[in-house]
Amino acid sequence: MTAPSQYPQAIELKCWPISFQAIKNGTKRFEYRKDDRPYYVGVTLWQREWNPDTGYTGDELYHDVTFIIRGGVFGIPEGYCIMSMSESRCTVHTSTRNDNNPEDSEELSCLKNLFRERVIMVKQNQKIKEKNINLLRTRTQEQP
Image 1 (tube, helix red, strand yellow):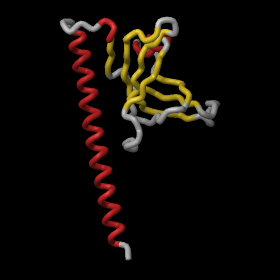
Image 2 (cartoon, rainbow, N blue to C red; image 1 turned 30 degrees about the horizontal axis):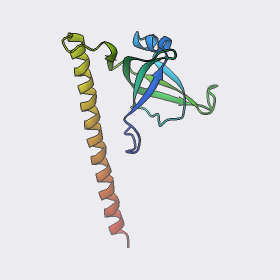
Image 3 (cartoon, one colour; image 1 turned 45 degrees about the vertical axis):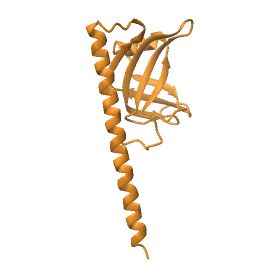
Image 4 (cartoon, rainbow, N blue to C red; image 1 turned 135 degrees about the vertical axis):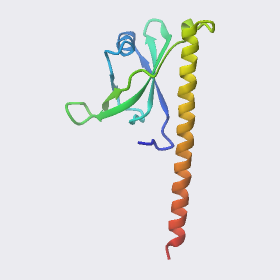
């Protein structure tokens, strides 16, 4: 599914340490959240580890939403959703970044790839939008 152009390509989320570590090690592959943002299949969740006592830790994960169940069914309260997530596409440790560290170079490469993918997606969305506008213009001109 291609997201409407007004929807974000990524959504930033605070993630408490216990959940963040479970997501990072692969044992938690879902998010149960208040449905107060434009979540959709394909959006990237930018999860930032946040400790309530000290604030952001500098660790981040990037996942794509692969499935969503919205509230009102299966006992999920209205206004909430459960999202399945892909494996982490990228793990970032900004608090310990070292440009001479090979793992940090790998991290930077991952971020560049994420950015490149998003640029391609935006360009594809723009082409689809232009095609739809041209189609509407043609149909409008054809009507008597």
